[in-house]
Image (cartoon, rainbow, N blue to C red; front, side, top):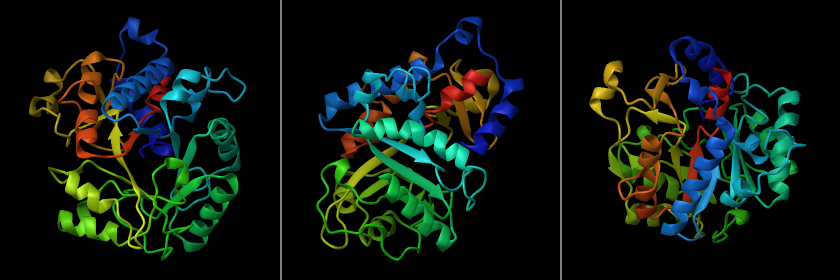
Length: 326
């Protein structure tokens, strides 16, 4: 959720304060990210054979060169079940402003490849004016995408408009391909208690919820997820857990206090994202960072699977663009 214009500003700001070694400069950053996503997917499948893996803003990894005429990377496509995309029709340059058609067309060329390969496309547009929200839902529906019009980029509440989810239904959702709408709510801090958050979601009819593993410092447990799965109208929804793999966040369980001091930070921890203080670029190809994310009983992925989520929503996939720009 952190890129587009903010991402471009971050690149400009970080260039002068971060450097790669000569060997790192020669890396294929796109392929390193593909490898990372594929490894997370493979590991998660050992814990849950039907786990859903949905990267956000990573559509350019679908082909070898990030162009619609490039060679499709079959291994990468096999590792994912859908594709998340922000700002497709609204929010690329500024919230509640229409995205330039040239950007929309360029992104759609890549999304269409994934869609034609049976991947569900989840679009989050950032718009708050009702007419713009209506337009976003209409355009995404025409394109065959499932969308959420987020009226605040913080993704910290349930929008009042529209009063019911677009495509509201009472279905029992067991597959990503069945969803008609979704709710993206990863910062529940406005809710006074965990129960308040759970009850607010239970009172909606969204087919899919993308949320965080934590409420405050508390991990959501199996009972919490059981309650979150049930829609108000009696249907059942899917649950995806948000996880950033291209940046480290200083409020996560894995963060060590001495990392706040530059001299004691691990080598894989890179420059702070000026657009999102407390979020740091990471050398996502580094085994030490990857071991935090997956592959062992204390890893982030293992915690998500143990909680009982249906899948994982991977953010900062497009971190490869940042390293390519250095």
